[in-house]
Amino acid sequence: MSQRPFDRRTFLTTSAAAATATVGLPAWGQTANSTEFESDLSGRVQRNVSSFRTLRWQDYFPNLANGCILCDMESRAVHYWSADAQTYRLYPSSVPLTEDLTRRGRTEVIRKVEGPSWRPTPSMRERNPEWPEFVGPGPDNPLGTHALYLSWQYYRVHGTHDTRKIGRRSSNGCIGLFNEHIAELFALATVGTQVVLV
Image (cartoon, rainbow, N blue to C red):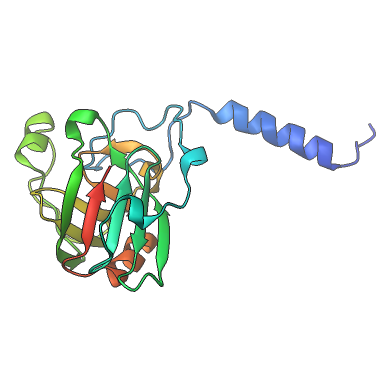
């Protein structure tokens, strides 16, 4: 039997077939102890990659005092501008699962916590009574490695250990970032940083 030479076309055809065959399979990173409201993260998800673009702070903030964070629900992105306008960052994010869990408007960072602990809100406990009442810092914590607490009760910009959530509607109201991104944003933001969710 002669062996067919390996070429680029064969590789691309085989790769495309393999990728198509995996659509609809369960996500491997899911854990039984996940404490986020998950719906079905294993299905096909539309990500808004085409709207992931840089924006101008002037369209959302009157000034850059204390720096600014913009959480864009439509493009599922977080933008940061420093107070001196020298630093701009753009991060992919997770956003609330449904409109009734979404809050929009102006707020600010009131507290920064590295290694946050987590307690489900009363409404989360009502929806998911099997969830633990408290989760300390660590790999099972749904707030990831860092959290920026906002002036609205229960709302945060935080990390996540479940990287499948980024780019999706998957949270209970918070904005989630990859842990390496929240660590960077945590270092840039201060108590008093302006935050707008649109």
